[in-house]
Structure formats: structure tokens, C-alpha cells
Image 1 (tube, helix red, strand yellow):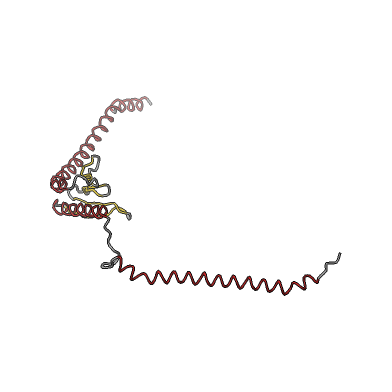
Image 2 (spheres, rainbow, N blue to C red):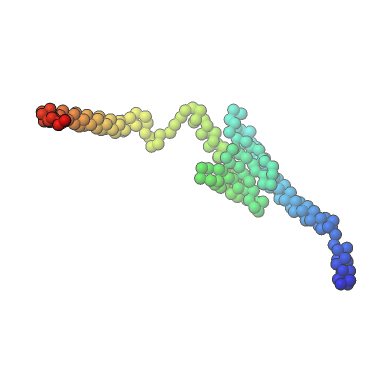
Length: 204
């Protein structure tokens, strides 16, 4: 028993909690260094894309506040184009991914390891948003069918609308005739049975 106790004491003396804590801190620091390096690498690539897009960002009219054009910090930096689209780096930290949030979920608009294709897609997206805003501000609407103007719509769908109105008029007229016939029938029935009703005497 004494030998076993001496072995336990010798093991406890060699193994200290402070040493284990130091080892855990060193491992955590190494992991943090890796995370920081990856984040910095992503941030650097997004900075390069932002520099490539700087002329486009500057050409956007000052009265249009649809766009952000900022790089967010965090574990995964993002170059925000607007509230629903951004560019981020894939897991390999080399591939640019232009993403957009839609009603059906997040979709990949473009993906490439080169800056130029992504910059071209972002430029086109910004242009589409600017034109869309101009149309909304000017009150312009496009017909559902090309070449179908408002007079053409009235000409094409006018007979259908009139037919619908005629159907409702016919329905109401028919319903009125049925109701009038029912009232006449009720009056005739009351007149026919009235003599029998008055002739009947209830026994007391």
C-alpha cells in the first residue's frame, strides 16, 4: 500500500493543473491565429474587389440610397452591395461568391476565383437596380404582354368584361323571376285553401 501511495504522489507531483491550462491556452491561441489569418486573407481579397469596383460605386447617383458598399467585420467578412446581396469568400478563401437573398432562399449569382467576372456581375446588378428605381420613380410600367397598350387592353378585354356584366344581369333577372313566381304560387295556394280553412271549426 505504501508503494502505491508513493507512486500516486509522484504522478501528482509531475502533473500540474497550471501546465494543463497553459497547454490549453497555447492551443486556443494557435487556433485563433489560424482564424485571424483566414479572416484577414478574406478581408484582403474583398478589399481588392472593392478597389476594383470603386469607379462603379462612385458613379452611383448620390440621391440613390439603395446600396451599402461596405465590408463587414466578423468571422466571415462580406462586401455588402445592398440589403439583399453581398460578396463573400468560399471556404477555400480564394473563390469569390456573389450571393443574393430571394423569396426562395439564398442564390449564387456568380462564383469565380478571378476578380473581373465578379466585378462585372456586381456592376450589372447595380445597373439593374438603378434602372428599376428610375422606372418606379417615373411611374413606368411594362405590360404583361409585349405590344399590348392600354387601349389595346380595353379593346381586347372589353367584350369579356361586358360579358361578365351581362351574365350577372341575367342571373339577377332570373332570380327575380323565380322569386316573383314563388310569391304568386304562395298567394294562389293561400286563396285556394282559404275557404277550407275558414270552413273548418275547431271543436271546443
